[in-house]
Image (cartoon, rainbow, N blue to C red; front, side, top):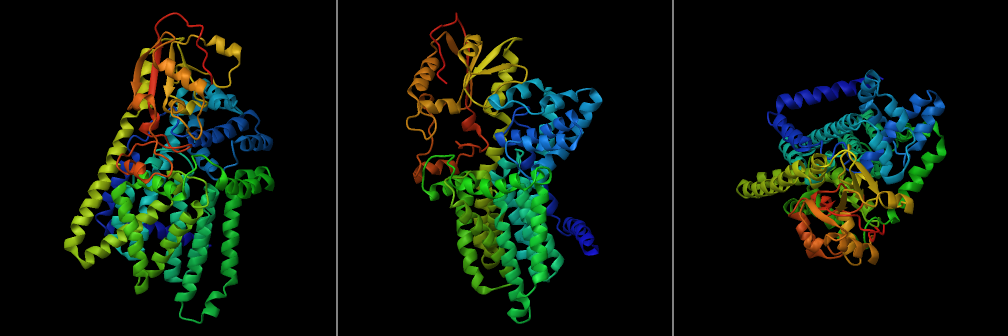
Amino acid sequence: MSSWRSLSRRAVEQVRSDLRDDPYLRYVLLLSTVMVGFWFWHRIPNFATRDEYSRLLDAMVVYGSILEEPSFEGLKAGVEWGRAPFGATLYLYALAILPVVLVAALTGDLGAFTAIAFPGWEFGHYEAWAATPEWIWTWSLVSIRLTNVVAAICAVYLTYRLGVEIEGRNAGRLSAVVLSLTFGFLTISKEAGEDMPALVFVLLALYLLVRYVQTDDGTLFLAASAAGGVAIAFKLTAAPVVLLIGVAFLLRAHAADAPLTETLYRPKLLLSGALLGFVMIVLGFPTALVAGAEPFVERVFGGSTSRMSHPTGPDAPMWWWFLRGYFSALGLPLFAAAAASVVATVATLRDRGSAFHGTVLVLTGLTAYIAMFSQWHDFRVHHLLPTFPLIALLVGGRLVQLRERSSSLARPVMAVLLVTTAAYAGVGTAQFASMPRDEATAWLEDNSDEGDVVETYRVHVQDTAVPHSLTARHVAGQDSEAEEAMACPRYIQIGYRDLLYLKEDTYYRNGDAQATYLRTLLNEEYNYRIAAEFGARPPNFVPQRPTPGSFTDLLRLGVVPHTDQFADEQELAANQYTLILERDGECDPSRHPPF
């Protein structure tokens, strides 16, 4: 137990030592804080992603269920309600919004949590969102977003620490800077979910494994196993950490000054690590504690395998999905540097220098993640998040190596790379201050009157730009009586995803009736005129998505930060284009939205 207690003490001492000994570290962390924290409150009290909404709602429903029925059954019912039995995120966000719950108790708004228990699913739980006081959504989202901001800063520091341990302090600084300027990393830092917390524990496990290989301290191996288990409990795609643990064990056995047969035979350490990791995974899933093994097994084994073949994007070659994700996340200059750094790093392995073991672990992690995603039908930028720090470490290490060999060549290379990457990330980050849906929401708030209604054709409130104070009615799934009741709303809102009906042969939204109706509406018929629009209008209102399988179409994604995204990825400015039409005449009885 004393050795475990010493780990936390050593961690605090290490942070203090780094801040004391490295005068540049505080500026690196300041850069990171500014970049990840800038405009983190965008879309509030609405949501950056559907995942953010569901993870927050999972925690709120648990509170509401317990308050409604303060018993184990109330806890169990609240935990089991979730969209899917996600793991440790529920613990984290339940803790993050606890101050909001306590303030609600003091102000007499605690009933909002009991009312939210087991909300209906229609229009993305819209009734629960509209009925709950706006301040509860605002401060709950601020709390969980700040949790993600802190996690992102921790990830930057752990990347720095890994760079220092593997290749020296200069490599650590450069790696941390590169990660702080990676636009895909910055985007995910501005949404709440399980991705960033999982990344922190993946990096923590990797750091502990590097130190284990260097020192042969069994406590570090066990701590890495525990951190890996927590990472998997947050997000199942952290599974490659298991391979990292195994490779680190082999590297330590190979490095020891003893016969390999002796150094490999450490059953107590291996079994203890495996058991500790498994226990952390089980404890990390609330459903395993309150509902038994069945939902846990279904989530871990059923959910993880089904995602591989589940299509959430068009059919395209796997290389296209990788390039699409990395071009968008890194920008073209950093992508080129990353590709060159991977090749150069593999070439340096022949030297078997002091950085050999740490470099092997970084390459193993990167290879494992790429191999895992290559088995999927498609994936998003947020799935690639764990690879960004690994890429940053390789780029930082190779830049330092280049500077040692030829400083005259390294200086312009580093200057061009850092300036172009900073420009790409800086422009993309600054744009969060003027996002189309935020501006459309503000316009509706300023121009609508009490009792006004906005009609939308989306199936989830997160896809819309609707003020909390304005009534929204969605057409999809409504019966004829409900459709008649909203036949003449003051406003109609058209979003980017609605316009996909106008684009022929989309993988998801097709329909002649919908396309004809939208085109008629956009031609300002049905007695509706265009009152305002936000974001860049697609040519003739038709979205221009990269053609699946086309390399040249992807190049723009590495130059313009805010480009089109698919499925559950955070929707950037391109996807947030919003058009608002206002009624300027009598009701047109011929208008029947075919959604």
